[in-house]
Image: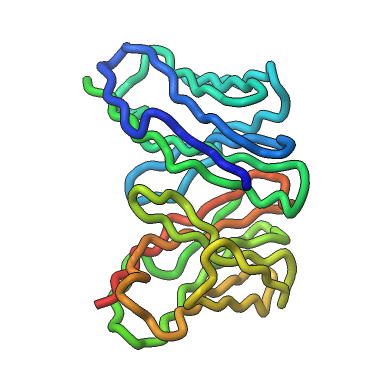
Length: 111
Length: 112
């Protein structure tokens, strides 16, 4: 069974304090890994797709990286507007391609 | 931009009622999904549909059914609502199953 574990569950940062969120996964073969951002009262919003170990994607203060067992979402010099829940989802190469979601990391950035 | 619209942001119903949640997407996507999201449990797939009139059970289909009569519309039906179905319900769509999903803003459903 595919498993996705995100850590930490919650993270509080001061504005400008860089950190990383972790998504570790167990799948028979990885087809793709997705990162989403979810604001309170909203649906998840797609950020990145990663397909193979060593791949990196960047958007503003966010950078996502991928290894064979985990992905990191690095947040550089965060701002209060980066506060949100970040979700990771993993897609296995066999079967239906329906992604398995992690439970998310709730990030709060204090001014 | 893809827009996924859920008909209600908030809904309050009573135990035993039949409840309909509606979702419409405007990008001609083949695939549509219904999830529920609960604190500490994350997103759990209820049903998905890969074509008109086609549906597949997800991880937690019990107590739910779905309908997809038109490509752009996917309905979730709670046959006889129960209090343990109080939750946030999210609809999503994608062009292909291996592509990222686009989500609506959710319906917060309370069953009293």
